[in-house]
Image (cartoon, rainbow, N blue to C red):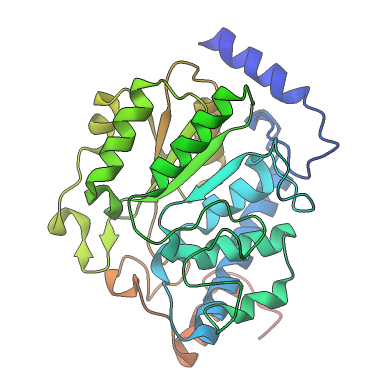
Length: 312
């Protein structure tokens, strides 16, 4: 495995990045300055999410805030992509299965340069490209139309299988909620990917332990997610979804596994960064009001009171 990992690192290091703004590079090169930039970007994405949801008056807060670190890691470090050429055939594909957390996707896409930040204000507005669930043909950078939970893994598998048939080298990532693993079609897809040894596919499971009606383990227990995926022929990793270095390391390990697909169980806190939202499942599908948004933005801008905000 070490020999294969070193070979993969050498391959990644030698990539020509002329057509990419974010080249997938070994985690060795994620230096302190870059890591700080990713963390600051995640904080800005969280602020974007709060503002968007307030403006829209509807939408999903908890999951969107909880996944900001992972989206920052993907769009500003991990993914091979080019916002100026969103249909570039060699780009990595990121499929968002739990489309209701699209505010965090839209914020990441805008900050990466796929469209202007001002457009974030149109979330869920009539005629907006930023629909309540992503629509593939409406917005550059959106790979799939999502809505029905449990469908994303099958869509990602189709992309990964096509890449193999076409002898393409790009990676396919599928971001999933833990709650949608209560859907049977997730496990049909997982069996297919394991059987076909789809090593160009990585599933990232947002393990925040909540869903719209309560805690997952009370509504319909999911554990042990790790042993279930392993029994279907997957390589399984676990990571702190708010520790960007740890998460990037897990993704790099996934790219070094050549004989099977990988599932990364990312442990996250729903509503991360906003104290009164954290770990409260009631924030799964509601937006903040004006007062709550003001409190949330103050907390995010001051890192929970640790620094003085320029807005103060």
